[in-house]
Amino acid sequence: MEQMKMGEREMDVAHPFFTHMGMPEGVGNYTLRLDGVATTGEGKTEGDFGFHLETGLSETVGLHIRNDRVSSNPHTEITFQFAALSSQDRMSGFSPFMEFEIPTHEGEKTIYTLVGFSTAWATSEFALNQSLEYSPKEEDVEGSASAVVKLSERFFPVVEFIGEAAKGSLPLYTMLGGLKGRINKHVLIGAAYKVPVSSEKEFDSQLLVETDLEW
Image 1 (spheres, helix red, strand yellow):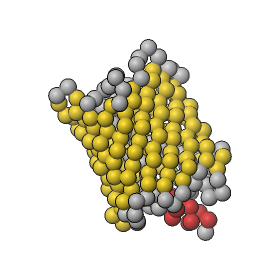
Image 2 (tube, helix red, strand yellow):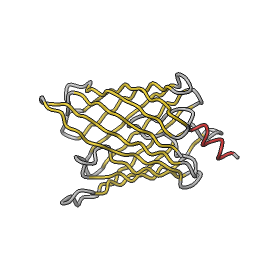
Image 3 (cartoon, one colour):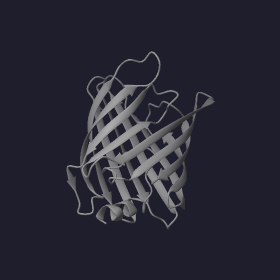
Image 4 (cartoon, helix red, strand yellow):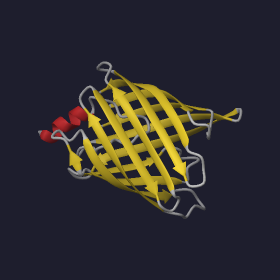
């Protein structure tokens, strides 16, 4: 009964667009985020797609399999998340994780190992999630934070801040604003707009359409 209640509560508030959930999913719960992305820069627009699968392997261990840019990103992330500290309802807490970036494009052979942590503060009305990770081989730090509010039973405004800093390069920061709507118990559809907020930038803007499948 406790796991069923956890699953029901996890579906009360929508997942963010990019940010990892701060705590592992409940055992037997699955969430698949499917993305279509249009990136505009240097006077042209390019399309791509991505996915993010989350589930719980045990009461304290979660699994993420993710690639936000399948066509242009030659690595897919496999992350094992460990709930070290959690609230009584297991919706809020602190989770260290280990991530492996596995090559999925022909000609790419390097495997990257990253370490990091995520946090969550969530109720049935809102969810704040944060993730920070470090790649020793790349000397790169990446992080994101999100806020999702349950505006009504069907609508969820989302704000996210995403940053990246690498040795010898200027940091990159972006902001995202969007809205997700629940179609039924198992499906949500959302749209978001993402823009750089740092002097250094990789693109001018991104338009994102995302479908969440929960079961």
